[in-house]
Image: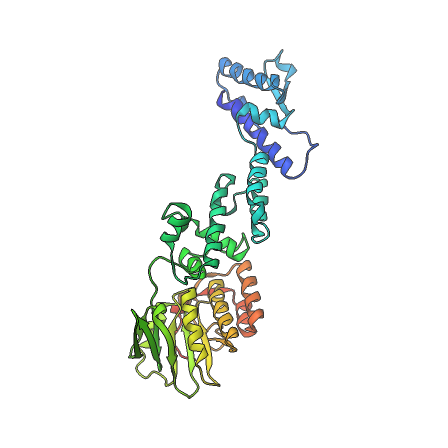
Length: 405
């Protein structure tokens, strides 16, 4: 088939696919062979090229796919003025193309059993139906979404808190690196939102306990840690500047009877700077979350929350963006389960002047501001949202001065 005739018929099929996706089954679908609508036909350089193109379109008409409307002024069947769709199924067959409505129906059948638990997949299918590419995927990528569901369900049902991502990838997909390529689809499933701002793979995997390397919990401050490794027990004092331990080895904590202040921080630079302060305040404990805290990290966090004396206070300091507030929300859930309340530190800057030139990474999107609003309302962090709504700016923790609550 000539490139021009093929292009014309594929363009007509795309219009048919779009019309069917919108429910427009009675609309006449056509292409005018004019300089404005289809200039490629008018630019055919020789009589032979034009005759070849016309011949291909006659064949499509003979197969019942289209009707060819000839320009009578140019002579008998010399110049095409318009092609009109006659039968979209016949057109797709003539082109040897699986039409979008068939492809979408097939993948919808494969995904429908997952709709109840992952309703966002309905929107994925809806976007495919109108010709969009949700998260860069097409109907040919349906197995990516199915494998992403398998990964999420495997992690949620697993008793293991830290699951090596390449081991689970090999187990579920027979490809040790495949799951690492699915983080965007997994992120969508976890949020149940196709439009959520894309997170990095490390944050997504941490949320469901997938790890690339065994994690290290970094802790500084006034406490003792009881650990067990290879059936040997040890009582460790947290020496300055900090202590690093495998979360799985930590069994319990011993702290002062006086009220304790706990501060968790999202970023490693801030943790090191706070732990290195010469005159560290008494009865303060500092934790590094490593970005989004993993299930094993949260297990240790709950152990620490469980031994706090009354009137202790728990703070978190993270980036001022949607990701930072999502991390805080995970910690707030842990605190709620322990009968405690999480407060935020330096996540509204009303009393902390900052340099826009140095501190602002970018503007927050309207969707991010909305997500922050929902999180802040859930945990009664209204001053933080009021500041963000008046200053929709993404500000990294490392760009702010290091302070304790």
